[in-house]
Image (cartoon, rainbow, N blue to C red):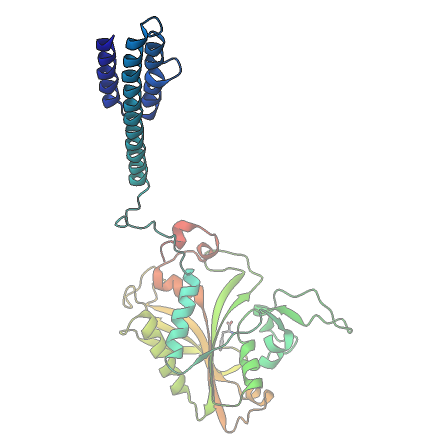
Length: 346
Ligand code: PHE
């Protein structure tokens, strides 16, 4: 019997040694230490023995039981510690891993162009102001020397707001250009005036590659004692060189806008072909970039400026057109079709 007990102990300890999982450990516990386990049945087998022997073997068996219990507790502790270490390793933060990139948006190409244009002018002393998209007839036309019935209205007589005064007039529209802001700025300030006005404009247009019904303009206005046509040419020339390259040449030709006199259309020599003629300049060697002119004395007088003292120049340019020229974009509709393949390029 003693030998049997010794064997049982060796076997149990050897098995325990080999265990590396909590489930196996539990099985082992049931097999040796459980209510129907090996030790219990050994003790039960002692009943038939004489008392002396039963006592001695019983004591031995109990000693062995406590040894196994002790070893069991140790093994259990070691297994738990190993498991905890494994989990900790798994959940460890590797501070050397590169972070997940945060998806970054970017500015719309029209916004970028507006900022670039405004930056060129602010660096020359202009201030940026904005005005309302819904505008009065007075600011859009009347105050700009375009009275009712004037043929120049045809070009801008476009999207009217469905609002009538008592005498049946509809005096409100979506501004077809940013020029109304010339008047609003002059009404509120005395010379010197130097502003640029970026803003969305609206026209009733059949859209095509070069026309959209909503688009951006940047208006400019400089009024002071003694401003000349040469000042205008110098300023706009410098602007064109900043946007399209220092080697640009500029050309000013007569054009007509009721609120300027004289009025001009400004062109730069084609930056794509250097003036030889290509697709971008439509074989002419020149690219028109804006309308401009000396502020009409009638406009100055209307806002209460003395036109015998004050003179100034104004200009207006199309933002998308600028960006199209600068980046070789062939269709203005690309700006507003939400095509990420297009937008991501800027
Ligand atoms: N407002 C004019 C347009 O929309 C452009 C312009 C502005 C011309 C200022 C001259 C002076 O076409």
